[in-house]
Length: 153
Image (tube, rainbow, N blue to C red; front, side, top):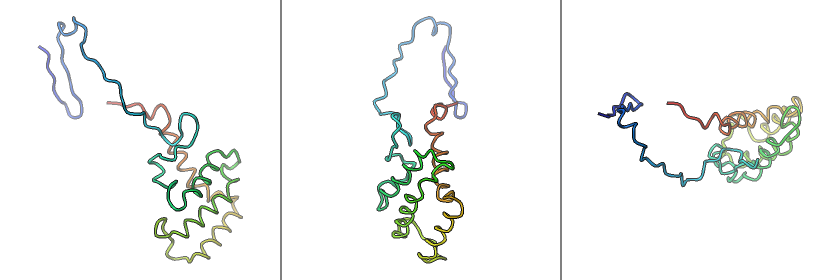
């Protein structure tokens, strides 16, 4: 006699030889849902609708964000993104115009903040500006890798 029992998160199914003697009548339905895409689509384009971007591509600084992120993603410079300083600067300046949306450093006024960031760009070839995008890029590569789509029981 076949039966089923739950053991924690697993379901254990016991079947008899008779159950295995006849072909299964179970049919699996085709998934009607589109396969979820990660940050990078199969064609190599950036998926601006990816939830991982948290809507940054569509806010008041969306165009600046897209320009900076695209530049960084496709950058072949060493260090990666160092050729994107103007785009990062534009994005950063836009973020400062909308502190209620993007936040603002309470200890610094806008001019001090811009000056400090420009000094940092000049002293480290823009590496500080690319840190955020490097982290996003690294974390999202795993979302798009085949291993990330496999599940274990």
